Length: 148
Image (cartoon, rainbow, N blue to C red):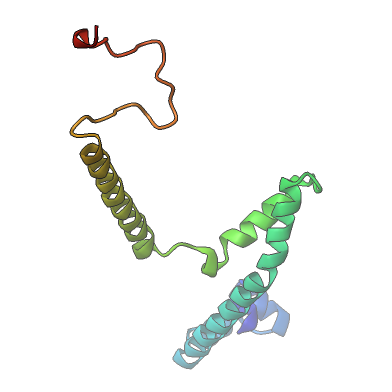
């Protein structure tokens, strides 16, 4: 059963145990064996996920070392990235990711609109459209003729 889970063909298993391939196929197609194989696959999957989670810290350290120039191995970097990509705890939830971005964008928009309204009220209806941090540049507003 484990050999089949590992990907060995019924023919290879039959040869190993000196049985007919059809006998192995019959055994593997049994409902009881199928049920047990599903259970084992689930446990094997949990073990793999646990190992990925346990090694993610080391993978992150490898990426950090490459980023700092301490490690120059592309192979190690690629392996670390692959491991981090497979950690389910580090994957964004499909439903939550976009809604969180949308919620954050909505909050930001409300704050910006309120800030602009407050600025407009403070400037008595004159709205400054100069981008934040930009210098006024060579263009100046025309002089008021009444100031003479």
